[in-house]
Length: 135
Image (cartoon, rainbow, N blue to C red):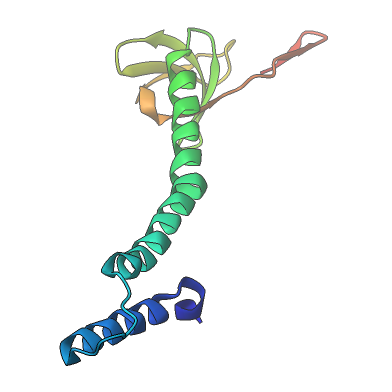
């Protein structure tokens, strides 16, 4: 099935027939250029490479770029979620580490130091409702 789609079998057969005709010294035999056989093999590989690029590599690069922008935009007071599922508020940011406050702000919150890359997302929604803060 794949051989019919990509023409590999016909390219190989034509190349083999041309080589046999040249070896036998037959005059008037139709000869196929070796470049046609190579093109028949290289073209499907190039097409597969393009498919991999547009379906796998390019979307992953876009996703990595968004994550990098999000990590660079972190600031004190942001509510974040770590990759371990821990919710906290950023207290301090150093080079590659972030100190999170875990727990209720009015109670005694616990400090936790995590790596910057361990932040999964920043909570965007902050709603205040009659003295109750949901963030």
